[in-house]
Structure formats: C-alpha cells, structure tokens
Image (cartoon, rainbow, N blue to C red):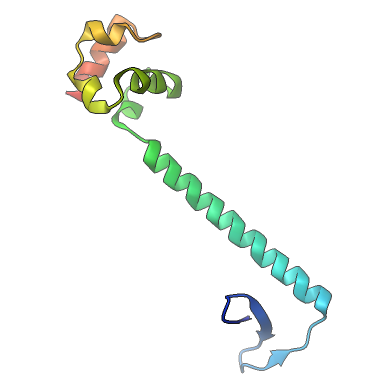
Length: 109
C-alpha cells in the first residue's frame, strides 16, 4: 500500500513497486477495512490506558471490588487519605466491615 501526504492509501504495489490497477469499489472496500482496523486499534489502546489509569492499590485487596473502591475514593478522595484513615473512619463507608477495614489498613501500610 502506498500512502499519500494525509496517510490515506492511494495505491497498491507489489514487491517490485509496480502499481496495481484496481476498481474503485475494491479501493473503497480496502479503505473502509483499513479505517475499521485503525478504529479498533485506537479503541483497544484507549481501554488499556483507562485500565492503567483507574488501577490502584485497592485493586489488590481481596474483598474490594469496583463499587467499594469507588465508594472509598468518593469518601476519602485519595489513596493517601484512605491510608491515613483509622478503622472507624473506614467503617463509615457502606459495605466496609471491620475485617475488611483491618485488611485495608494492613495492605496500604
């Protein structure tokens, strides 16, 4: 594939760099296929970045799922604030039991 200045495919070539004459319909099909592959790759990489961005030390604590993680961060704003909170402060968050609060303190300290 030969690209133009705007990174769009303008022709197909072989190993000896000879251009192929192809129909407009085939050319449009190839272009749509390329666009779809490109969009899929971009979406995949966005999801990877989102996952990395939303990952925290809380993810490694058994018993802390996405919902409890969100509730803890909503209440305390940062992992550092959760780390500094005492067990009684953690118990104020819906779904956090005494055992889980102790586990959070152990894992974050």
